[in-house]
Image 1 (tube, rainbow, N blue to C red):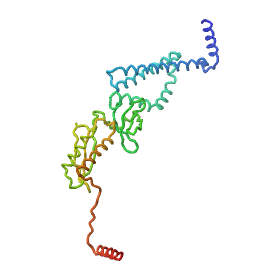
Image 2 (cartoon, rainbow, N blue to C red):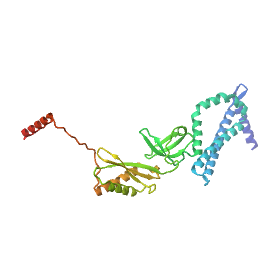
Image 3 (tube, helix red, strand yellow):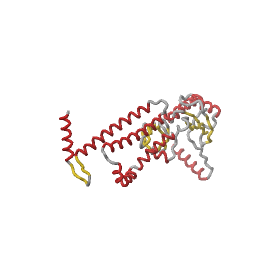
Length: 307
């Protein structure tokens, strides 16, 4: 072992002699290798320790998922901070020497990573005040109008939101802190859905209301409480307009499919009980005039000639 140790010492000495001087500092091949080895070991150790901390937090049943995520983020920051100072100490770098570069370097990092640190802090604040948490359903802008999706993950930089058509949106944490957010699950998971429908003039509205409530109450995902309702919303050009109000408590399962299910049941019940769903129509009234009578006579004459 002594011979092997001597060989290692000679190799280190030889590598240390290969290099160049930069002011009062000697930069050698061994110094560069030492830095690379220490950095690799510290990064590997930090990742293992952060992974262990995450697993440990997930086993604590008294913490909900949001508190676990917050703990994981704080633990990760602490682990990487400690690892940085450990690497500095192992490499023998004096912290006072870093103050020479701290001004300009800190300014450059501050400008370059301003958004990154802003998103990091915003993500921690979101988890602390629990305004947005994994599993919540929030409205997102899909470029074609407002859509909605379920919060899958709150990361260091962005929140991952998956919509019903399996599209994933990455929304910067800072945007959710500074802009208005519509959270369907913040204080309650119960969401109201308005479903408009029209019936023909002359329909028995009491009968229509009964059929609409029957269709609503037979739909699986519709809640019995809060109670569903039917409102007379107006008198249209060709129909009596009504609105069905239904409640669900699983908006992540989709809203459009609930509307479709209710309307299918309404259609079948209306056909079964003879309730008419009107189509747009217009009444045209022609005023009596000499020109109109002349036109009617000309059309009649042409029809007679054709016969």
